[in-house]
Length: 202
Image (cartoon, rainbow, N blue to C red):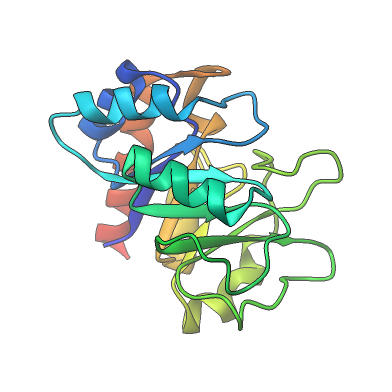
């Protein structure tokens, strides 16, 4: 089953709606981001969830010590690294390393464990960009590795990505928002439905 991650959760209502929609993972930004939340806010949200998906913390060039502290406090299942972190980063949790796709292609994933996340590169944004890229470039890596596709996904295009590439997972944030920091329950449901329909027809 293709994993669906809804990222940039900022409040309990969004978290509950993501779970109700069928998200397998939800993500919190503990980095420089418009969707940043404090560890205390994230923990309060997680503690209120009746059904608990996998909880992911997103970091950009944070120290391993601080990542481990937050991971322990919030009880993260996975740590997503969006910066210039090097292989061997000790997060005391499974790591999802984000590799930025450029015109030159995909950086080497050889030294990072599965799963990997591929996202579009941007000169002015170090985190998620919300911009699409040539997803076809991911085919070779998807054939050998567990790969999340991110960047510009939304209910109207995620089905195409799923049916054509069959990735390990897909990641969305701005594509299911009503506005920054506010998730749209209808868009989240439509996103998950599109994934599951494409998966069933593949």
